[in-house]
Length: 112
Length: 118
Image 1 (cartoon, chains in turn purple, green):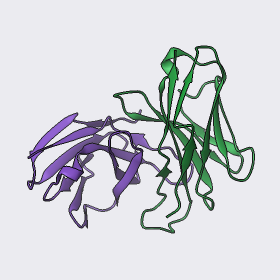
Image 2 (spheres, each protein chain N blue to C red):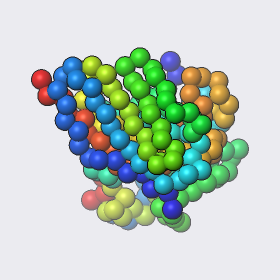
Image 3 (spheres, rainbow over the protein chains, first blue to last red):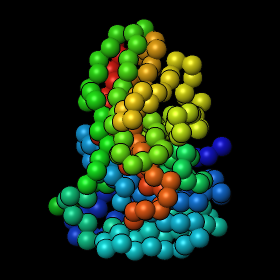
Image 4 (cartoon, chains in turn brown, cyan):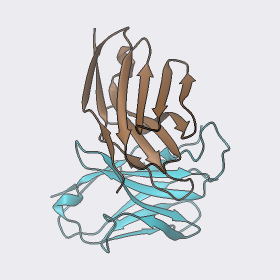
């Protein structure tokens, strides 16, 4: 079955880069997403990557995809206190009615 | 910017009672979803709904659960006889089939309803 794995915690200093990793098992995934969840809030989509891409950059965010190893990462440059949240990677096979499969989420902790 | 809304934000109910969680998806969206997140765990897909019928459902979505779009705007999740283990945050989401925005098949999530079963 489908499974998405993430490490639970990451601690970085303010101003450094954060790299959050994710592995997935479903090789037929079409789109992979990164969502952010702040305390008490819903899920906010940050960025996505299509499965035939290796890299996607969006301002401070860089997504890397290694399809051979089924490894996805999210790099946040110049990490700020406002980046403190739980980050979920999610995959979907197709579009439309398909539900997203989420990882357990990585708590990003920012040290001053 | 249009957003998905959910009511109530917090629902407390006794075990065995029926609950209905309500969602108003984004108006021109065609696909609707329910997810749940048990405290400290990952977000889990429950069900998707398209063209007035269930498109896909997970193993979690058993006979105790049902969904409905009673009118043109609301999308509801009903739990017939709640159990303690149904305590979770329930998220509604909606999407448009086509790539009309910045993200293909982007699912827009509501803020969630926290369900507490006592």
